[in-house]
Length: 139
Image 1 (cartoon, rainbow, N blue to C red):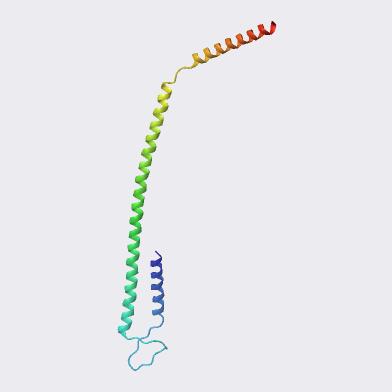
Image 2: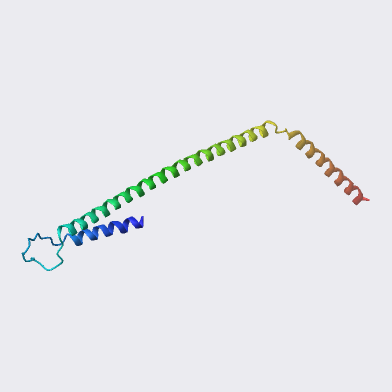
């Protein structure tokens, strides 16, 4: 990208240097200003070189643009594929977790009876312990 910018800058600089003063002269006429005199062939070479550079720059610009568009499209498709894959994995994980939660809720044992029995037995054990301590203290 930097190369294209430099090439465009050179092209515009070269356009301004060639287009400052132009005057047509015939053989034997005096030049209206000091400078370098070029014949038609040299001027044609310079113009064609400038036109070639502009066309080359345009071609490289178009190539780089198409290359970037292609890379962008490829990356976009790749990201969409990855997103779809991740979404499928996520959806499957959620489905498995939901199934596991439902299966755990289905087989949840009823512990109310065991809690009541444990409370009753611990109460009896504590009462017997207090009774035993009270008898030994009274002796």
